[in-house]
Image (cartoon, rainbow, N blue to C red; front, side):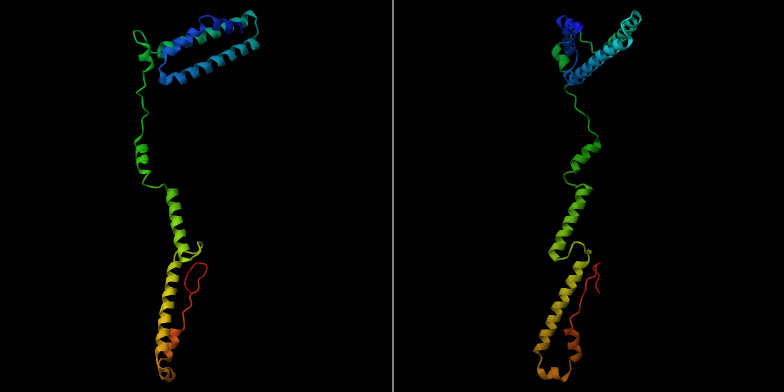
Length: 205
């Protein structure tokens, strides 16, 4: 606690100000988030080591060596990765990398261009099912029956209309012609309405 208070009251915050000037705006969020996470993880490690090793001279030497190694690694990392800012204005540093745009793969571009005109497989399947159900509903066919039920009903309607026309022609004939039996066989054929039954599979019987 004493160290944190002295660090905040002294020149400690200057390191954060310098870090802001060194980091471009594009990477400042990730950079400072990583620094804060490492800072508090290091503080937890130091406290845990003090509680584990104790305060004897040998333990203090080990802790000092660990802190020195971490500080040296941080200096090497800064020297290797931090940009050189000699003679460069703060505005130029902050605006570095602002023209960066993520690259798009060709497949993503093609998919984005064709997605508006070509439905996905699940959408095409749903659309086909909707059209099929709509056509069956207009024909009065249950959705569970097979697709060729529609032409069976059309054939039945055509036979029924043909049967009605033959019956009208038969009623228009004179009674003596009917009594003579000249067209008895034909009349028996045309007046017997064919029956079409639908099985579970929708086939004609």
